[in-house]
Every structure is written in structure tokens, then in C-alpha cells.
Image 1 (tube, rainbow, N blue to C red):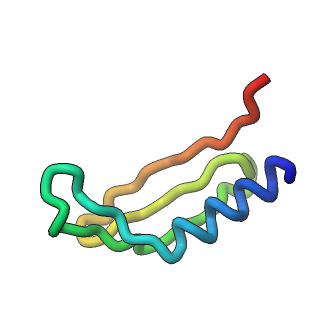
Image 2 (image 1 turned 90 degrees about the vertical axis):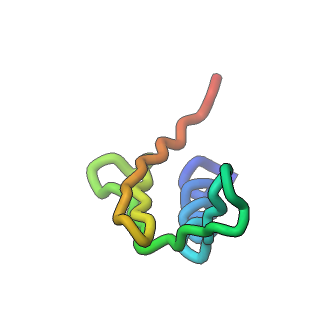
Amino acid sequence: MDLSDIIQTLYNFLYTGVVYDKEDYTKTYEVKSVRIVEKHPNIIIVTMEPNNKRFAIMVKELK
């Protein structure tokens, strides 16, 4: 499994995901969109509902 396989697996997981609030586990946030940055294919941008917060996840191989 190489880095691109891991990024694709993470993308697929996030795309169908729901995130639970760490303070209140009854509160959830839905993933509105997930995209892999074209110029930097090791970065995934996640946009959450309901407040359109955006997060970037960088996947990097550790040596």
C-alpha cells in the first residue's frame, strides 16, 4: 500500500463520515464536502456542516 492508496482510503472514509463533538457526544457534525488538493495531492480539505468549518489534513510518510 503506497501513500496514494492511504490518501484515497482516508478520503473515502471522510466522505461518508460523521464527526462527534468531543464535549457532547450527542452532537454531531456532518461532512459536507471532501476534496483532494490538485496541486498538492497529499492534502485533503474537509468542510463540515452546519457551520462550513474547513480543515486541512496532510498525509506524509514518516521516515
